[in-house]
Amino acid sequence: MTKAAPGARGAASVQVWDLPLRLWHWALAILVLIAWLTPNTYDRLHRIAGYAVIGLLAFRLIWGFAGTRHARFGRLGVRLRAAPRYIWNLRRGIAGCYIGLNPAGTAMLVTLLLLLAVSAITGAMAVTVTFFGVWWVEDTHAYASDAVIILVGLHVLGVIVVGLLQRQNLVRAMFTGRKRLRNR
Image (cartoon, rainbow, N blue to C red; front, side, top):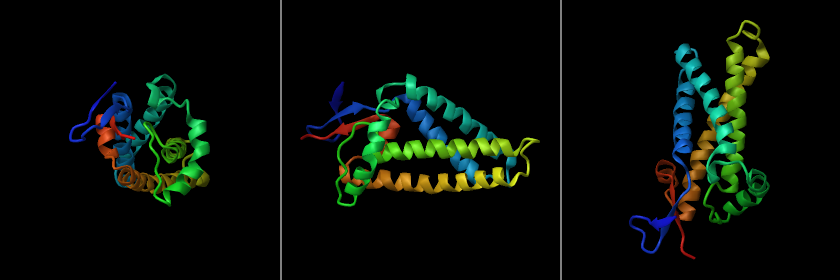
């Protein structure tokens, strides 16, 4: 199950993120960026990206129950309850060691999935005859979309900070699927 990580004497790595989850993550990142850059300029591309996000959210919901160990939602409640203390400890430079998502990452996952769902669904609603021009649909879409972009920035910052504290390249782990285990 573990093997030596390149360049790490005595360290081992473990497969954490499966290929479907990694492809989902990077596809979602690209589609969110496309959707953020294209409203009112390239409306067709914006809508296609939004509909694709809905498809990816549906996949993630299914994969959260049917996927591999670290893709499943099984420990969601435990990690969400641990998130406030984890974030508090980050202020003191204590990041802990987690194979899958840490509690802050879990809270970010849940929040981003919910906000992406709100953004994508209200965006789809806004182009229907029934909801076109309805102020609360447009406002909800705009606010949820802005919140997603802010949280994406916080997510990237969090990955960098925790990666530095843990002396891990977490971005590489999301490409390779492997995380280095620390010797204790």
